[in-house]
Amino acid sequence: EDKVVQSPLSLVVHEGDTVTLNCSYEVTNFRSLLWYKQEKKAPTFLFMLTSSGIEKKSGRLSSILDKKELFSILNITATQTGDSAVYLCAVATTSGTYKYIFGTGTRLKVLA
Amino acid sequence: DSGVTQTPKHLITATGQRVTLRCSPRSGDLSVYWYQQSLDQGLQFLIHYYNGEERAKGNILERFSAQQFPDLHSELNLSSLELGDSALYFCASSVLTGGGNTIYFGEGSWLTVV
Image (tube, rainbow over all chains, first blue to last red):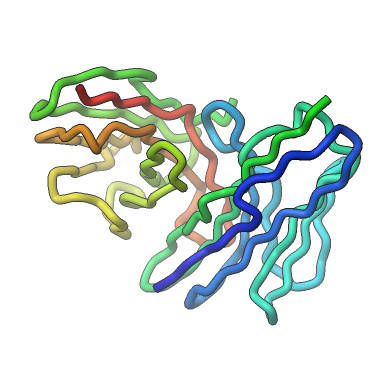
């Protein structure tokens, strides 16, 4: 059965800290891995990774994929209170048809 | 704003009732996905439609059904509702049914069954 596991489940840090969120997966027919940020309601797209070893960066956020070890990390540097959210990892697979399988998320709280 | 529109935003209904949730995908998107998110649960995939055709089913109960219309909007029908069906229901859309595409989420429909 395809699965996506995120760790840690929750994390509390202080402003200015750097955090690393983990996402590991076991799926058949991997196509891509996506990161989303969910604050109050809708998950908003952060990154999509398809190639191993290539870092995607956007401001203080960056992510990298390791297709050999089947995991990805999301780094947030110089955290701000506005980074407080649930971060979701999803894997797109083509087992018969395309599906996006989500992990349960990492809840990040950044304290002022 | 992702461009995906969901209605209603909130809904309270009694057990045993039936509701319909509506989703309008982003302009040009042919794929629509439905997800259920219960309290402290991850996003559970329900069903995927592409250009009017059902493409994949996830953990969707038999009491639930969906369809995608020729104008590409989609409806999720939930019947014989139970307390455990209370959740946030998301619709997401993408351009194609390809795994290399990003899916964009609507704001969700909060369903409370009492």
